[in-house]
Image (cartoon, rainbow, N blue to C red; front, side):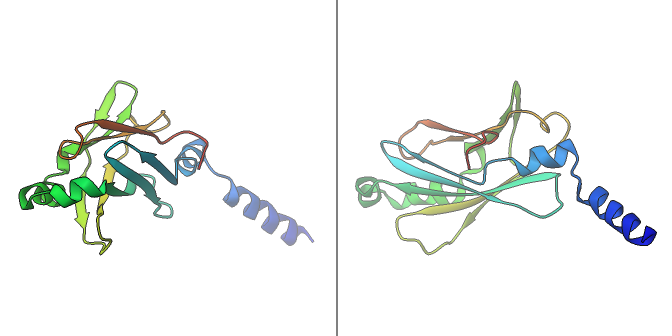
Length: 151
């Protein structure tokens, strides 16, 4: 009987999460913003047991009129020059992404990106906001609150 009690106690301790793990698990899994000139979908890519990076997939859908008028140069910007369009904010701290990768998703009229941020003590356990500064479609900035409780 004693062995069972010890086994149950060890399982209960192993199941406990640190405050940092709870904060990390509470980050937004999906959000969508509909702007005048585009729609942005934000989806979290969660790596189990990795609390050192924050990974998101963003899908951007410009309005049909913009897609019809877009030049090859405009499309080139959206495919290869998006590195500086994403920022992670934690209070006064601003963090550039560790990497931004354009993904050929095959979705007509849409653009998809993998965006990854490194997390350290200046960012962890704080309210986070991901900003997408649209430089090529409508010129506006879009903010996603990552620490809100809505999923």
